Length: 74
Image 1 (cartoon, rainbow, N blue to C red):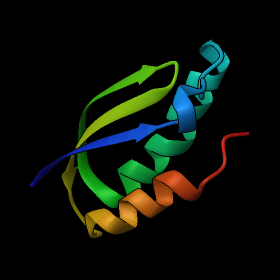
Image 2: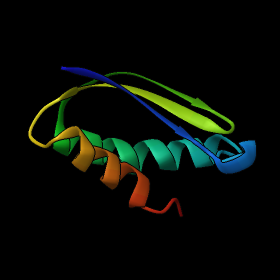
Image 3: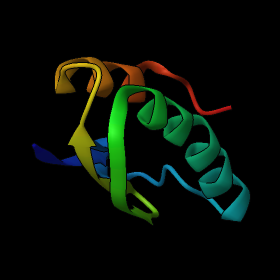
């Protein structure tokens, strides 16, 4: 099953301040996605939110969501 995941900041604050922030997000989050799902078809990283389109795999989508949200961006 395909899932559209959207993560938004509070009050439209920026979550990505530049290329380094986006690269860190992709490196950390996509590691989680690749361990938990079969495929990530597409992603979009905007200054105040992100979109992921993934195909569910080894874990329920709720588990994937918790792992994506709880891991802090450093």
